[in-house]
Image 1 (cartoon, rainbow, N blue to C red):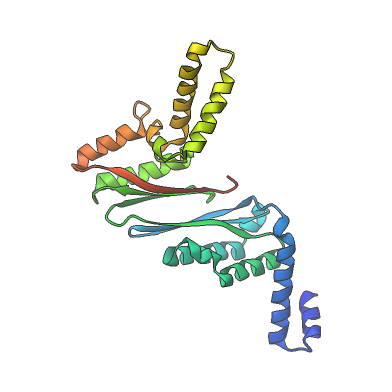
Image 2 (cartoon, rainbow, N blue to C red; image 1 turned 90 degrees about the horizontal axis):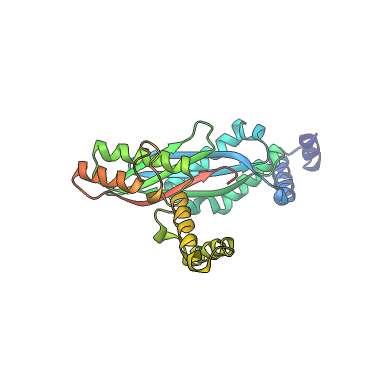
Length: 252
């Protein structure tokens, strides 16, 4: 019926009818912008030492499984790989996403995109089987089989542990202070002389949850990730450091 109305409105001109349909789709998509889009997929592309991650969202898992949605994710992934994360904010790209939203009848949005270049280092990646969690990690390390495996291990670690920072030094000071005050409030009924110590202990535990280097290594519960990296450094004969990582999870 939409096609029929578009043809009638354009006096049978196919090109004009397509334009009418496109404009209508964009208008419908604009109306949906206030809705929540918590479903979707994460796309990953890696070639050489460059990787790209993209999270494309929609309202239902049914739409996320359609070819149109997956093709859009593929296109965004390629653009991010070639031109960086800002490519998904290009006017033509946003226009295409709105057009897809109109076609699929749901809100569709590119929530985020990231490109990682591990030049002179090692790039690790991981995409979960459900295509809802993706990770890229860049290591300062020599190109050896051991270092490449280490990068893969760390990508899986980050995916499973939901690491947010490399180390506690990377956490914004205001965030650390906020958490510390929360812990102090939590122990205010304890003796005054031990409140600070207990709060500091809770803070250290929090670091171990969100900081990659402080986490327990998933392949060896007797090691922290920092100790694992030191071990790999010993095997490669060079220092191995985490330079940067990107982790996307649909809905989080």
